[in-house]
Amino acid sequence: MAQFFKIYFLNFLKTVSKTRDVKISRAVHTYNNNYFGKYAIVRPWLVSEKIVIPAYIPQPSYSETSIPEKDGPITPEIKDEYQIECMRQSCKLASHILYQVDTLIEPGITTDFLDKQVHDMIIGNGAYPSPLNYHGFPKSICTSVNNVACHGIPDSRPLQEGDIINVDVTVYLNGCHGDCSAMFQVGEVDSEGKRLITITELCLKSAIEICKPDQHFCNIGNVIEDIANKHNFNVIPAFVGHGIGTYFHGAPDIFHFANNYPGRMQPGMTFTIEPVLSQGMTQCEILEDGWTACTVDNSRTAQIEHTILITNDGCEVLTLYP
Ligand code: MF3
Ligand code: CO
Ligand code: CO
Image (tube, rainbow, N blue to C red; front, side, top):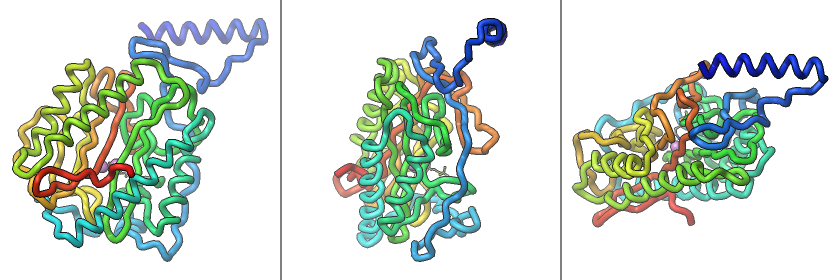
């Protein structure tokens, strides 16, 4: 019914514009003002050519072939002091670069521009942008705007006032991946968008607070879903946190919804927590590009990610800035 009305209305507008010579502006300037708030519904735009990496940058096994040479471990790995120090360095670089993104965000810049800037910062620090060609991903970062829940591909769409955007930065340095993401607001964001971001931050913070030796992995999801639901948001189950090290993704799976996944945390484990919360439905559709995941009801989502290390008496957030 809504769809019928939209088509009817657009045809009506066309008739008006023909008769009065009024131009209909491009979709970029239209806002959706619905139950979920006031924001633009986003669809992919044009994706630019692939960037070539200088030969002196140490590259992960998939950089040419798109497929990692080895799978990640199937049981959680315990890292020694040397491996932990490598993780500290790659995570520190990822978070420092993510922090710089804030200074770049403004209405009118494209996510392609963001990708190029972040790409140059990563290469400038002697690291490799982990997403690039990982299972064929075409760019160096993921940029997910409004109704794009995850794995958005940087493209030629200019950011517009009111957008909320997740930027996900992963770097490969010293043979280790460091992975983090954050939400950014473009100009003035409506109150529901702001609330969605605040609650997602609260979910991640509360989950990190319970991480310590002997804690069940599943309690992360139990904490996150409980808080999300109390604030009338929903956890998107399709996107999970993961073990990380010389591999981008490996055991354990970190579910962000109520679950009873087996296993407990032990000192020396490193993994990510990266909940995606939705204002509406939790079902997502993957678009033809094979990556972009949009909510089926076009509701907005927010995601935040940290890589953490389990220590002897708690945990250390490796991607904390500064
Ligand atoms: N950084 C994402 C994560 O948090 C993974 C991106 S994979 C890519 O796990 F191929 F889309 F880049
Ligand atoms: Co991750
Ligand atoms: Co990430």
